[in-house]
Image 1: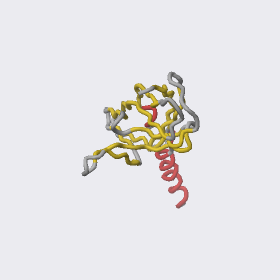
Image 2 (image 1 turned 90 degrees about the vertical axis):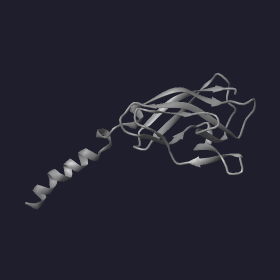
Image 3 (image 1 turned 30 degrees about the horizontal axis):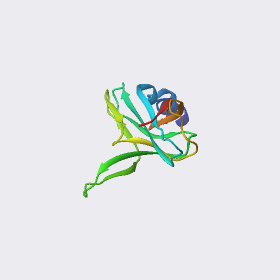
Image 4 (image 1 turned 180 degrees about the horizontal axis):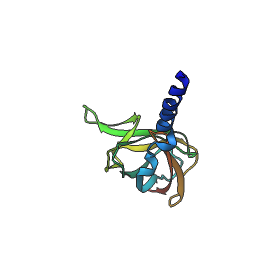
Length: 147
């Protein structure tokens, strides 16, 4: 008898919390102008930029990204310290407000590709997959450009 009453409640909990029924953050984000900073030779590290537009009524967060271009990938921000010097720090997430936008641009938040494997050809496109806090993913083509 107890199990007969408990089973519908457990099933409802599973259905309400399963990923396919939850909001898909990747689907609610539109992307504008994704590009990578290409240099004349192999650089150890390089940055990626884009603008993210959140079309949902809930905040959205990018928590990472993946690419075959580099040994590792990190989210970074730039800030001016007390000494007046610009410094770069790794961050855990990039938040996009509801119905808002967030630009990843030189001098601010950006994608950092660490230990690049090969030089990037200016004008070529390269694949990067963003990961959102709900586990959803969005794969994009980034154009390599000289600054």
